[in-house]
Length: 361
Image 1 (cartoon, rainbow, N blue to C red):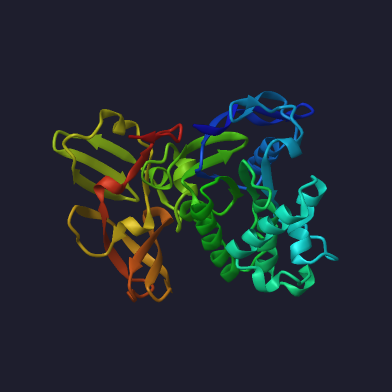
Image 2: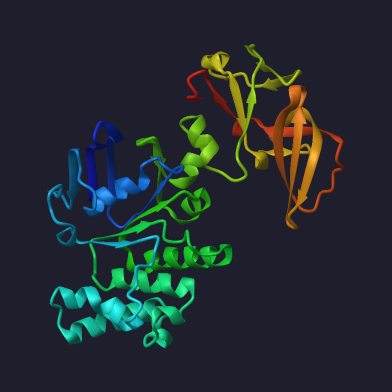
């Protein structure tokens, strides 16, 4: 069953169309993440679902009911904003119960709901404090608790972790994921951080310029990106994109020319449209300085900079023509600046793109 459906949804501000005919089905109980660069339309799309922005064209269905013209308060959704939007003169308990009191919920029931949300979010010791006495992470938990007590049909999160420092973002990311597991509710979460998307989502929706580029399970997008944009946006460090001078298909496999080097791969069943490839995509973690099973010799690269991260080492290098390339190595490898390294790559882990930036499968 689909909790929320978008059918050819469009949004225009005057003559400027910012959402271009989006079709999307949000499955019951799943955690969906809208991800994309700033200005791609992800927050606008979320606000249209919430009822905070009008839908110019198309249909929004919640539980199969058309809700284009239904007031936000009657859609059965709860929204958590980037800013906490807490009342500074109210306690945690009063902030969480305020919406219930405004809708006429009885005192006993409201108190029971607040107590349950405080237990789930570990806010019980803070229930009498005011927002000024809380940390950023605690304030965000209060904002989430205010949404939980309404027992909504679905939760909408609009970049709720953007105002937190790096350590708190990781902590809250885990807490929100665990909250979803406990509640089993439908959640839609907006972020520009692809790491949040990869670690939290059941399904990721990648947006660009008001259009859905691809949506699916995180590892499906990571392993099989539909185009160059998705390939470059999903994954950290970012995928290497290496221009191909030539691709020759032979009976025995492929002959690739890039960066002034020629590489031969045994690939007898290579699809014929690989001859149209103009760019090769290789993730830094799929490069190695050592021969491995199913890895083939790749390019020689000139080391420019080494970043030692403790458990991993990032190597920034270049190949012919100054083309940059990044390799992520496990452990504390210490190649020297100026050193030339022979690399190896997993043949089945590479991605080819044509002149239209579409992936060649």
